[in-house]
Length: 185
Image (cartoon, rainbow, N blue to C red):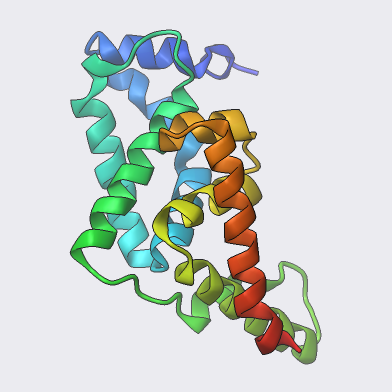
């Protein structure tokens, strides 16, 4: 493993906070996939997610002086992303994920046409269900299920107590079940 990968996120961000722009690139590369996936699940549109991803890293650069070492970088980054998604949600209605993108991600192997169709339909239904959740519940569910973050870290990201986050998760999962059960029967 090269030295760049051994430098922790917090140290890199501390260097970015000091104006070292080149130290932002390793962070961008490390978080490109998980952050883009998170944003896409939040806004429901690949194109809009790519725009917001760029806005998030631009905000990281502009807010670099606000970063307080050794605060966990990942929590700080995702908190910025949650806020950008909220802003986007206020300014425009979420667009449902297209069938083509859902189908591309449905199965990685070479499935049978029937399996591929079922996986695609399921992915579209789950995406629609997630989009139906209130923004705060959606953020918690996506961070917990798809980003696999612990509740305490999610609480830092969304600016709520851990108990509130657990409540949002509970209600979010109930909302997903309510939406999905009649459609998947």
